[in-house]
Length: 496
Image (cartoon, rainbow, N blue to C red; front, top):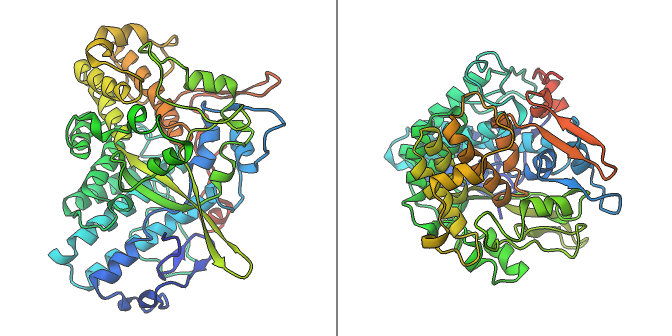
């Protein structure tokens, strides 16, 4: 769809990349005045979203995966991340590849902002400025969320962040310094708050851009990480546009009756799936191994995440496909192979990923409600999710009450979750219910890792021989290691 970058060079802390693309942008880095119209800036922003997968290396770090045994496919990135090892491979689906693509997206956004300023700004360019600011904020947020410690206001002023780029890159071999997490978060917040009022919903294919709803969904996620609960609720309300379950992904009515192929097509649809707020087409081979890799969904994890009956006592609407655990998977991914050389039939594989969705937003809001003690509101959002993910759900009979949540979902370990803030006793069961629902709903999308970091959850992996491997609370490996190439340009490595 759009992987080839518009030809502004890409800073990847390794080399200066100049790719061939549309003639209107086919200029050297020093001739950027050629980006002299709103249309050209809009083309530039097509490449301002990280075109790389993170699920491929974050999912195997979580408690969503188990060991299928030596008969399964051995995939290096899957194996290394299952054991939380540092890896410096530069191939697709690795941390280094994501790092490079995220900074490439930031470079695109910064060049767009510089070009807007060069044209004098003004109302005609406000929508483009808003999108560029949100793109820059999003890519930096993903980088700090993956490669740094979890946000903690008590330590954020000294914890290592990442380099926050606010200007177009002009030096090939520059030196870079890591800011603090507090500094990075403050700049993300500034970009979000400056960008959202400017966003205009004028896109031909909205799901691949920061629309107003997508921007508010991102803000909802950001403020969830900083513990600003009322802001989470406010932005979630604007992203959801109301309380209608019709905006959620309806597994009961729109997925369960369909074939595997039909379900994958709908899951990543930019047209017929209202839950999808932001998509990206990424260079990735993830669709080729996500079902067959050794450390993925094995039998125990299938039973844990996708029991036949869910907590309502009724059948879950989810279908796990695959004849056995060597192939278990959910219909979320499909590959588009772009042929670049007809003579040799060679090219590049792309996979579409959901970056932001209403399913995430409603849980952001539910968690914020729970933290504020607004338990009736929290249980209402939980019930809305069960409604579309349970076969034959009848709200008049199956809705949970506050007492139900506090009884059914109370965790066995009261210290299971230890975020930087205290969880009220009355809210703990709600947090447990929400985070476990998210494990199922976002299985294989990498999302669980962010909750593990945010709530400081211990993770245990077991191999087929019963050996236990534990990632304790506060373990330094929760911050994925900075790529070696970036370290050579002055970026300090993460301590180990």
